[in-house]
Image (cartoon, rainbow, N blue to C red; front, side):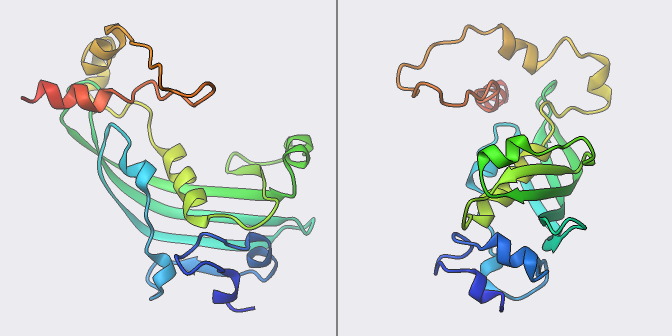
Length: 198
């Protein structure tokens, strides 16, 4: 099966057949001229402390392990510039992306899977059908980000700086926020950093 046969949407990787991709042991990687590789990561771009980033040497590969289970692997190098959570000045980090997703057909199947023998780089996930590959890749990139990026010299003062100002600020309830929606505790930190630079 060809790579393009795995992608049903004209807009890119919105309906990606991860199961067939793994069973046929295919790979997508950087440096290959293909319109499907023009990634868009809107949620990553909205991270409050992340100023800029580039994704290098990325690869997504499919395979089957010794138990014939499908495994979707994400690799790459994220070169990112953050606002230091202590002083607000830029701090650069090079983050290695290394994550294996073992596919199961349902949430129940994924939750019941015995993960005792899995390594730290492997997670079990539900994949009942086609997926948005760009969103899955973006999830892995976001999970790799440090919660509070700091300069090494700022680590000597862990109890002061912008993060402490933000923690001490009163939190106003948002009546428009849907019940059960994920709360991002540092969502306002980016605005705080900007205000200190004026």
